[in-house]
Structures are given as C-alpha cells and as structure tokens.
Image (cartoon, helix red, strand yellow):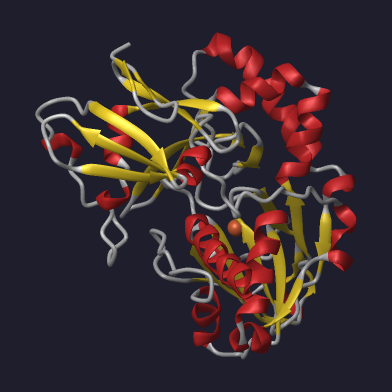
Length: 377
Ligand SMILES: [Fe+2]
C-alpha cells in the first residue's frame, strides 16, 4: 500500500481502489487505467492510438481524486492526466464481459416450426432498416429465416446476402449451384436423398450463414429438411450428459479431397459459445475423415456420436417443407443442420443457388441497427 488519495481513492502497489457511484469500491489495475484512458482512443478512427508497449516503466499513479463523477489520475514520470468517468469504470468493475446487444437468447425450435418461421419479403428488406434489424434478430434467435419474392436473377442472391454481410467465398468459389436436370451430368447433382449435414466443416472456419435461393423446383419430392442443432444438443445434454461432454471436447477430422484441393480441418460436434452456452453443431458424414483418434477412445466416442446422430433424425426435430421458386432460405451453418429428401429426377427441374456470409458480420450489423433504434427511441 503506497498511499491514500483524496475522496476515498486508495493507491496501492499495482492499482487503486476506487469508490464507485453504486456505493461499492472496486479495484483497477494501473496498466488498465493508463491503457484505457479516454485520450488513448483516436476520435476519428475510434481505434486505440496509445502504445502501452512503448512505456518503459510500468504505469504508476502518484495521486488520484474523484471530482464531478470523474476519476482524475496523475501519473509518475509524466505530466499526463487521465480523466475516467466513474460510469465507465462501473462497467468493468467486476471483470464481466462487455455487454453486447447481439448476445440474444437463442430459441430452440422443433418439427412444427415452419408455420412460425420468421419470413421477410425481399422488397421490404431493401427498403428500410427496421425489417433488416428484425431479420438479423431472427437469425440470432432462431438461426433461420425464409425470404420471399426474390427476383429470378443471378444477382438476387448476392444482393440479398450483401444486406447482412459480405459474401465469403468457399473453395468452390463465390456461389454454388445445386442444380439437377432430367439428365444429371454429375454425381453431386443426383436426385438421391442428401443426409442431414452442416456445410464444409473441412474448412478452417466453416461458413457462417448460408443462403439458398430457390430458382426452380418443379420436381416430385425433394423436400427440404432442417433441424435445429441447438434443440437436439440441449436435449442430448439432459439425456446423455457424459456423451455430451465428449462431443463438446473431441476434435473430429473432416476432409475434402480431389485433384486440385486437399482440405482438412477439425471441428467439434457440439459447439459452445464464449459464455458456455450451446451455440451449435457440426455434422457431416460425407466430409468426415477417418477418425484418427486412439482406438480405445473410439470405444466411448463412437457410441456417443451415433446416439447424437440418431437423436438428430427423430421426427420431433425434423422441419420439412418445400422450397418454392423465389424463396431464399437463410440459416446459421454452425447451428442448423440441413438435408434434402430424394426426388424423382425425370419429373422437372430443381435449382438452388447458394452462397455464404460470416456470423461475425451478422452480429455486427445487428449491433449497429439496434444502436440506431435505441438512439431514435
Ligand atoms: Fe449443404
């Protein structure tokens, strides 16, 4: 303990105790106080302009006092004075994560979700920010939304995606075409059932938000299947807690190998967010590499993995519907598992055009739009 400041501030060796307006006293580290001095941030770029690495000596306060709701600090070895509002300090007093409007509660959904699914018309989304904010919120809470009335053009998909982010290419390029004709020319474009999966877990950072613009769907069959991985994972945690822990902690290898690429990455079947809540799942049997885990560990892992995969296929979770031309289904590729029922290949055309954006940009645009709403209210 080095000394006592005025108005109840207590200077210590590495930091100080500050009485806050809440009546509580909180400890703040000197490095933190100096680094986050309001003068550290450039007004134009809003970035930190202060260089803590350039400080030869560890920052140390020589005096500190509170005046008009502001903590004023005089520093040793410099004439710099820090003026820090107590209201700002209160936000960091308990070491809790910074408040985030984009941290909205996720709502798990089940097989009957189709009628309740958030729907937005393309024309209204392009008109104003209120609908855009509602769409972004639906993506954060439900992980899925249905857009209607898209023009039947190549540009419509990219125009839509650009409303909530930048299109983020995969190793298949900017966009991909799920296209099947009466005479398919490629095995990938067959009419066979497509098992439930998330896309491209063989990428380091698997795509975040997926867009599928339905350009044509005149075939018999071919219903779209969507499952909320969050709903399954929450039930799985209750029913099989030990299996759950295993799927949260085990890295599973994924791959995609052809003449011109050899993609490999590892993902966890059930994913938790930074708060420890379930954020989603990664499932893809067709991109799963041969598991290179110790064989003894597989004695436990495979049964847990299969129990989860089987639970995911239960009717209870399976939302099935027919995508219509002009619709675009948008979903969180780290949470929503998707697939397709088989269809009759000689019964018509089915064409979906797809692309991806990232989830970070979705949260970003939601924060911006929500901030504007708060300022207007
Ligand atoms: Fe897919």
